[in-house]
Length: 107
Image 1 (cartoon, rainbow, N blue to C red):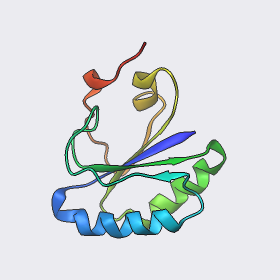
Image 2: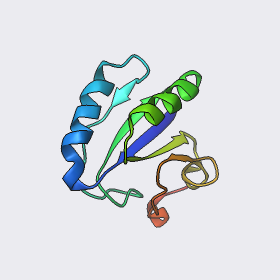
Image 3: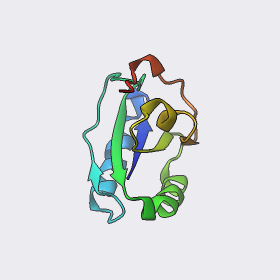
Image 4: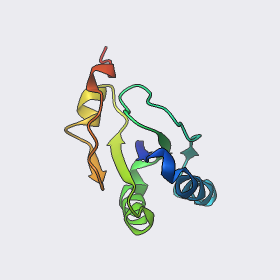
């Protein structure tokens, strides 16, 4: 399983809402979260989270490259070591944005 975090500035919320509506209908995505207009955890700015399977990684990457415009997107695997997932194993489409890594817990 992978997560993709779509980051945006508040002035671009309409564009992100339109993207979210399209993602909700798209078969590649297992989950499309609500738009968060605030920083949360390691994410320093407004964002929206999506989930998708390992098998769809290449297709999701291609999709986001086609539709992202100026939006930065972080893609990372879901794994126990969250720090590694958000750094060494992460990839950016656009960006990158400096994450608040001190908010990642590894137990």
